Length: 384
Image (cartoon, rainbow, N blue to C red; front, side):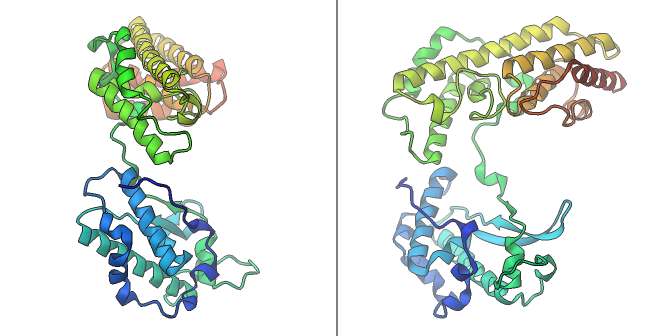
């Protein structure tokens, strides 16, 4: 399967002259299925179950072939408009990405043809707003001569993609439980990491810095697969870097992201190795900190307050209060509550009540705020 990058028109930059159905009087919806089947990439459909990142390369090549045959407007086949009640703005048009599952070749091409016809029919509707769906959302004054429905769907500038499209084989570390990562339940020899990493990070498998992001993402995931197969699911956290790195807001300083941490094969392997060991050290450090305070009875308010304040500060110091540090903080507090025997549904409610957006990126909370969070959480535990 080709993983060459293709350049496509940017959908959000399309203008009405680009998509106006009046500019394609010869377009025949009845002939679209045959057209789609005739395109060269149609003979190279990836197998069902292909990773979405690789399947996207094929979709890009099919889209490029459609654009070459029909014009820039065809890039919109992956989009539709849905009227939604948006918080604070009422019912407005929202762009949604169309998902095209890769199944059998015949089904896949048929669905793609249907999506292209649906996009054409939407542009026909936008030309006149014949169904009256968009009139109420039209901007008051724009000075534009474009159809009012087109102005209406362009004005909000809001789009959505089904999160399932970007499913990863590994959860974000914040989604792991303490049972998943508790180092006391899993033996680990730091001296083994260099050899394991050397098998995973080689000159032959590291994508170039200029490689498509999907190839870089697949490579990073392949390293995580290797680590978790060797050491367990906890090892997936090796990429939870400090600040705006790969996973944002974590405690690992040895790794940032592909663009900053991938250099020579030797240096890259060393960085990956150091990141995994640092992540493990952090988990062992947390286990020791938990042991300083547990067990704790629900009514031991002073003990709970000290524990929470201590852990918030420990996480802040480790994450340097960088971007999204509060996600790591919430995760660590959730792990502590889990280690204390508090049920999952209760943990979520307790943390929402105690923190609830009170921490911010790049901002170290003052002692008064930390004490308030600790007091809230302790009080809720006592009342649970």
